[in-house]
Image (cartoon, rainbow, N blue to C red; front, side, top):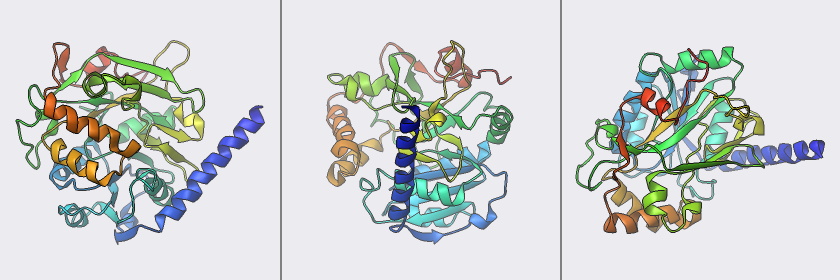
Length: 336
């Protein structure tokens, strides 16, 4: 049974890799600066569309953390994102007009780029509205974390997605280019989370927070998943299966301790809930390129009109990573 199970998942992984090759044919290289990548560089991979206003702070944040090179796939932006990205010296850029949905919501494209350029590198895969925090991130850059992970024999590092939001109407304060979005969306749910283990892929499955509380009140089972494994010592044999929620081989999903202890983990501060969400939701309802025919964006669009304030009496203002550790939302494990 064990041999058959292993064979079955090996075939699944090979299928994912073959699929990424096929979908790579829709990518056009705008700028290839990968020759600048050094052996020990930590890389970042992302797919985006129409995120021009977010990009200056996104790059500042991750450059300050120690990311050396960005590999970006632009899904036919028309707001100047592609032109801005092409001007960045530490960016390699691909463009596509193909269907985001048909590329497994961008995962096929990112698997191909990671396979071709990230083999042997620690690679962070995030969206432009996700901000990675980890133990000691206020004093230690990402290469310090990856050095410790290498020395500990760890190949993947998890980060729970934490939805950030303002107090009051999310449309009230306009987001300004270059601004730290957490300066506006500085609140989060300190509890209200549930988790289980996916028996097939071994990954944790976490749901809750304001999206379950506000947007999926009547159907919390279908609220967005908050478990992520964004930081991986990449190998050309690896493949993401669904967003960054789970990978193959399955051993990479074992990012939690099964013996009652705690493995080190981080968080992704998710700055989606700004005034920019309103036009984004309207666009995605027309494009229908997101999961389940953009059901999530339909919930955003409907509820923002009815209840644009996500804040509640149990909301907590974000301070730093230590606060998240105290609340049990991340852990430094045995990294001292």
